Figure (cartoon, rainbow, N blue to C red):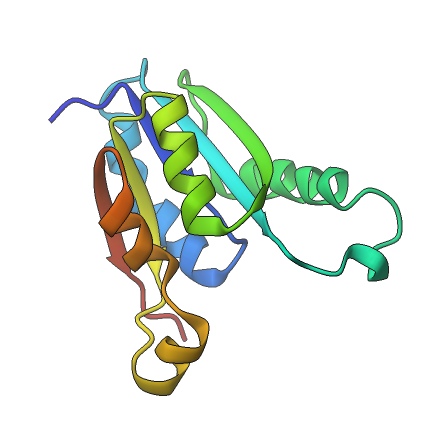
Length: 140
């Protein structure tokens, strides 16, 4: 299967790092593939505890994350930070940029933690405008 545009949502977790490492083979098959990285600042969130510009701070962290964990090679790499509800913004971004696939980690929560924290991956699978590949990553 050929992908022209892949969206990789990141949350800077160990799960995202491991998923990115495992998914690199998808990106490497075609050097012309655009890989889009997206971080969503979950709102409503109280940004009053942030000093400075929260979006700029996260953008800097995203750039550092990509420098450390994403080998760009000859691929086109796009990175963006948005604010909103993560699953909504991920699906909206994929549609706006005509992504062929979304690749993301799942934490594999069950029971009470799933009920309280929800599942961004589950919501993305349900509402995405394209194929979604989820990786359940066990860390530790």
